Image (cartoon, rainbow, N blue to C red; front, side, top):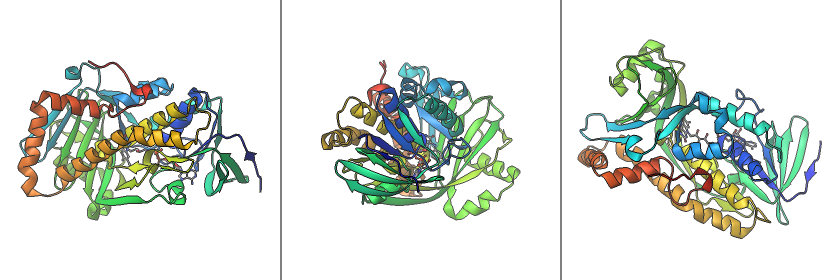
Length: 406
Ligand SMILES: Cc1cc2nc3c(=O)[nH]c(=O)nc-3n(C[C@H](O)[C@H](O)[C@H](O)COP(=O)(O)OP(=O)(O)OC[C@H]3O[C@@H](n4cnc5c(N)ncnc54)[C@H](O)[C@@H]3O)c2cc1C
């Protein structure tokens, strides 16, 4: 057994997924020494969330990634979203958002998670204050005076790392959250989501579509070379049958669910299932500890909020820790929770409400839904506000994501 005791009162980030890696980079950019432990080896292919899912990145997210030096490694692979259309099968309302009406060149960008992962790994390689332990799995935590002693299993044996601030960036089933005894409320949408790349007959013209129905939402995101990222939700009971469909039958299902706005769909890539749960931690801080990203809140992917929200967690935490003499001080953690509350609560409400209102079969709600969509489309201030929220500017955002908007 190897024992390495790092007694510097530093920050220990558990989890080097999209959010943990972003936090590590943001801290490094601010000159804060940290250790990041990640269970997977540091390759795109090994990391579970650096996969084929296509991420819709809000404008604020891209600002944040640019501020910490990640975006230059990813920009070439990203596709701007200039128009968003939201509608519901069989109902008359629809909502639109236009980059031009908001005075911006793009509302957001689409980027395959694999490309964002590769960009994060490249940027991590340039960090100078960061210690990376990967592969390394956190297996135990002991409370010690002024911090935590973390027991980490590596291929070479067990290591111990001391931390003045423990950050749980370890995803939906967070070991850190469970060890801290923080409860999490769970909701099973009883839906399974399939992600695939398709080629539509008509050019996407940088439009993103979201279409709701009783059996779940379907989204189409613009990608490079006229391709689109399809996100298709099916009732969980149908998941096995959909997973077994051949390309021809899968594309026929996608066409039925999405419709013909982009003409005939063809050439589907592999379709991969994801079970969908909502998991929300009862609180985001503990003694000398904080939860960020999916460990703090896992939301339905259709609202495209998970990483966007998690990055704002990470950048807010980095902002507070930079320059603080004690990164785990109770006052700092209280500030963090207060700063994040409006964004977190608002995004959670919006994302859950959207899926519940727009997808679940409640015929009595149909007129209300249509009116809501129409209202959004016609009432300029409402549209403007939702566009701001959709672009990731909500509550008191971290400075790194800000820009002057018209
Ligand atoms: C199909 C799909 C589409 C999505 N689309 C979007 C979108 O368009 N826009 C958007 O913003 N979000 C989207 N999301 C959500 C987004 O992918 C997640 O919010 C994001 O990946 C969360 O990142 P994370 O770092 O918090 O957690 P994760 O990505 O889950 O990373 C957690 C990491 O912790 C590591 N870990 C776990 N336990 C330990 C341990 N004990 N020791 C060491 N390491 C450990 C894991 O190996 C993992 O790498 C989508 C999600 C899905 C499933």
